[in-house]
Image 1 (cartoon, rainbow, N blue to C red):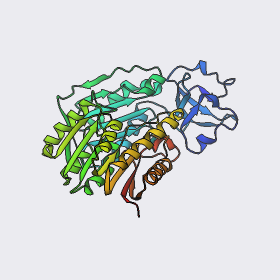
Image 2 (cartoon, helix red, strand yellow):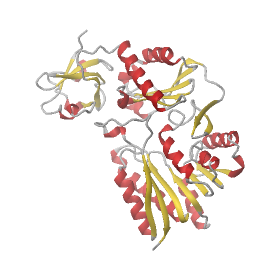
Image 3 (tube, rainbow, N blue to C red):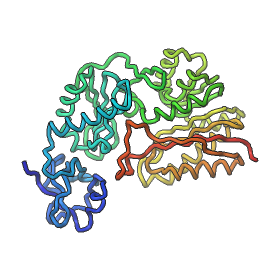
Image 4 (cartoon, rainbow, N blue to C red):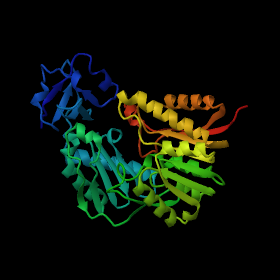
Length: 398
């Protein structure tokens, strides 16, 4: 079948030719292809100003990112075979990387499926669809996931702010099966109880898997402070690896409750404490009371979600790192991380440098990390590389 055509303005094809997948509304030649003529979620052929086809995309004429490329072959039919092939390729990569079914199965554009994220928790799939174009294929995706993986449940997690931009419902939907009363996953030699329905994002953060494993190796015999701990992904493996004492701090009572249950499940409840608090306030109080920790994990949620939030977010990251350094013991370890795409690795590097100098501490980086391999990075889309972390050794001044 032939799809309607979307024409770009002159010279607006450069980014797509370099490998990017997005078309912005101001790049469209609206005289040749008025955006209002397209329906939300329609499949279109994207052409340059000379009429040369660049690929096939889905479109939302009402969004700033109005089209997202699905294939660079203009004759591609976007249907069952297309989605089955993409899902199968994503599955094959994860099965090559992991020996157990606990991973991010689909990472949107990086897996050729923009607007789609799927986390696999054993037999349960947690799905986030963030665009109207992908929402239009929701039923087909559910059908294919059932055929490929025979899951016990598929939950559509719709509580994502990006869905608001695309005028989509924020109400979660159990698309298939029944959720178990308790759901367990395995990571870094530990078992965790997670809450897919009520938990943050898809229910778990697989992206830090390898960074958490590294930290656990280096935490033996240390007093550990895990800030923004969520359900204990950093703290529990550290306790299992021989940390003397682990304090998890988070503002979410439900997340801490899950962490405490998982700590008991792993036999380390007696060496762990769980504190519900605002992290800024906790650190201020710890500083005033002269409390010190041998190792601190600082893994906040995204504090810069949009470019316009950069100044305030940068200051929040700076304050957090500055406070953490003030309660870190001499020769201690600080793990400082950011999942904000708009805060670059260089930005975080500078925050740590300046914070250490401000309080006259000697700080060096001895390791670093990014997102795990189930969150692959598309080389032409810097937006897909978002996670960065520095492992720091901090001592008194020379």
